[in-house]
Image (tube, rainbow, N blue to C red; front, side, top):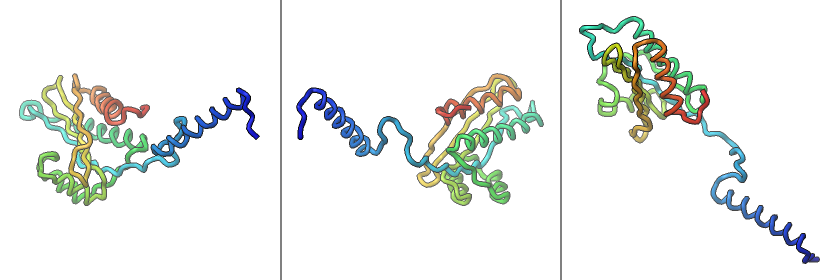
Length: 187
């Protein structure tokens, strides 16, 4: 029996709209009303191939132990932030392969050697970090990531540091990762 009162028609109309919204969301591959998807994407396996410092004036001001320690801390912070995001996991690099990487040409300009290393490590992406010391007051921190299968860069960003201190290096890597690589992550 069909009730033609205004009230019953409005309910039917609202129900039809709701059904249409759910059907459209399903058709577009989404979920209605912003609900979370059923399964999160699995973390991307990354091989961090190197974290190096380029000292433009090493003959006048050699790289210090403090700077070598800062390089280790940049690597540690990068790994920690990416792993804590749940978006990335890191593949270990065999010591023999690391020695080969360290002897090879600069990553990113070695005719694809970084992809060969990434495949050998079982990674989907490779990453490398360079810190360029222009002077005691001006440094650049550069992070690069590339897809091993396609050979294409998926990320490349540089931030400038003013001052050569533990705090400026820590701030630079955290800022770059938080604001450019993982902009939606809360760190």
